[in-house]
Image 1 (cartoon, each protein chain N blue to C red):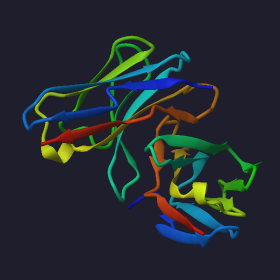
Image 2 (cartoon, rainbow over the protein chains, first blue to last red; image 1 turned 90 degrees about the horizontal axis):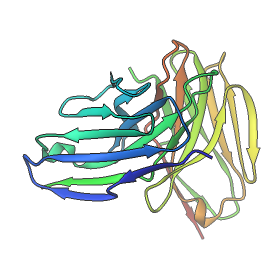
Image 3 (cartoon, each protein chain N blue to C red; image 1 turned 90 degrees about the vertical axis):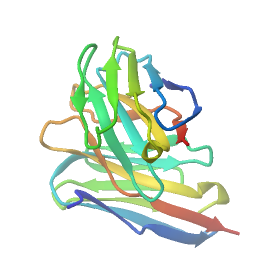
Length: 114
Length: 110
């Protein structure tokens, strides 16, 4: 079964702060994703990547950067955090080939921007 | 408009009863995935279907790409089934993204 880990699990920062969320997957999946989930909403895609060095823009990218440094590691960067970015962030991975869309999710990172 | 419409948004069940959640799609989807968000906030994979039906214990899911819907049936509901359930679907465009429904908040009561 896919293993996706995230760190930190909880983070509190102030407005204007610099935050990096980390995600690692250990199943050699091609695709990795960053989502945010807010109460009353489904998950919304921020950025995704289909391999090291690749980055694709998702549906809600404003205020976020991301970088895929290796097959395993995908980072989400908030360089000037704002209270509107207070949310629960999920990372996911999927094989992306062979016709399977199935995604495996990490445990989530709860970010609070004061 | 939203490509994945999930209903109901909230559902209350008594222990031992059952019900169904539904997702309707405004376009043809290639696959659907169902999740439960547990009390710790983690997303638990329930089902992944590219067609047909799957069953796991008290849960059963169906996906009809042609008719553009998927269902999740819960029978003999238990207190631990409470949580938020999400469906997510992969579009036929070849993109590897999932489009999420807005979730169903299920409360199982004694």
